Amino acid sequence: MVTINIGGKEKRYEDGIKYEVIAEEHQNDYVSQIALVTVDGKIRELMKRVDRDCTLDFITYADTTGHKTYVRTAIMLMMKAVRDVAGMEAAANVKVEFAIGAGYYCSFRNGLKLDEKTIEKVKDRMGELVDMDLLVTKKAYPADEAVALFAENGMKDKVSLFRYRRSSNINVYCMDDYYDYFYGYMMPSTGYIRLFDLFSYEEGMILLLPEQEDPETMPEFKPRKKLFQTLLVTREWGRELGIDTVGDLNDQICSGSISDMILVQEALQERRISEIARDIARREGVKFVMIAGPSSSGKTTFSHRLSIQLRTHGLKPHPIGLDNYYLDHDYTPLDADGKPDYECLEALDVEQFNQDMAALLKGEKVQLPTFNFKTGKREYSGKVTELGPNDILVIEGIHGLNEKMSYSLPAESKYKIYISALTTLNVDEHNRIPTTDNRLLRRIVRDARTRGASAARTISMWPSVRRGEEKYIFPFQEEADAMFNSAMLYELAVLKQYAEPLLFSIKKGEPEYHEAKRLLKFLEYFLGISSEELPKNSLCREFVGGSCFDV
Image (cartoon, rainbow, N blue to C red; front, side):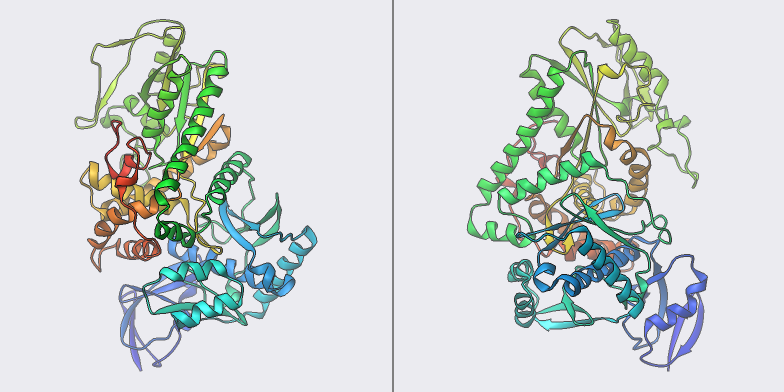
């Protein structure tokens, strides 16, 4: 018998009992389905068994880690269903690409085409597998055996990935007779994947799953066509460079061709910035370029590079940060927890911004403010701004795409740009890299360099930052005139050497430890690249330092 402490209460259980059984006993205490447990602070899958006295807690679908576990298991369920319906070769040529809202876009490779009827059969098979409640098991294989297993099943991406694996063992998941590798935790059986949809979309298909904010409800799919097209363009850049997965990237690093790849990637980004500048210059009456995007998107460097391109078209850009229109901090609205909410629109003096911009549009001279973050107050230096015939304001801030921010300005005077680090690089064909992981690593590195903030502090603030993005940025992204993807195929290999020491500083027992450990495990997939390879105007330098811009 073992003694388990749950919520301060001790109870005796048979030695070797599955955590799943204990979770079922306590499920009624939680609104959302329990996905994982923590055993003395260490995350464990429900399929594991109790082997000692311990303190136990639960993680549900409403938690970030729990939701990712649901998504991961649903993807494996889909892949097994594809294999069952269309064969192993088909399963080996389905790639889970990127998220479009609550949907995960899956493409078909090497000539594979699944029509709507076949996709419907795959969906039906997924439902059958859920009803069968098949066990999901995990086994540690010697690396050579795991690679041989993946090679036998046509999973060349995994063979390439594990060529650089230092560990002598690889954890392989099995769902009935289907074997696959997944980066992260899994549910114990198919019966847990109750909510999903699968349907044809563009040249591939969408796996639609519940969102973390409402994990017990199926969401509506919102296509977000501009975002989708931007991701497709970036994906094609990667394919042109021969880099679809981390294994491909590592191959190029080892081959000595990474310097050329970096220069080509930077040139592709510069070409896109040039295209946006040309579009702005061709539009008559544009005086305000409104730039918005989530945290660590590289907005500052992008604004500088865009301004240079605008100058080549005879325009005179002037940068303005919406942060300069913050209300004095004494008047900042409070959030639900009683803390200052600097992310909300009401934290800005929207009326004063509109008065100033409207006056500039009329040709009047205006004294623009700056915000002193040390005193928490707006200040005026006496410097006056006036818009000449070729002058244009480049305005950056999280509310730049929201019409309520610039309600007084004519639509034809504004050009809106959405920027984000939209990662299209995958760990392998079935393990996508969330764009949020890329941005979080950027922010950890930048905050440590520019603000002296610890990785623990940045990670602790991240959920609040993400809530602000979901509420104030993402709903307006499709209203942009142009989108810019700031993610670079090589950047995680550069960020790795800066992020790892910061993440290792988080000790076991700290609230941010699990997230730090997850990110460290993720970075193990990458071989490192020196930042000396980067051009001085690279967007990546906004985070690692050494930029020619004031960032």
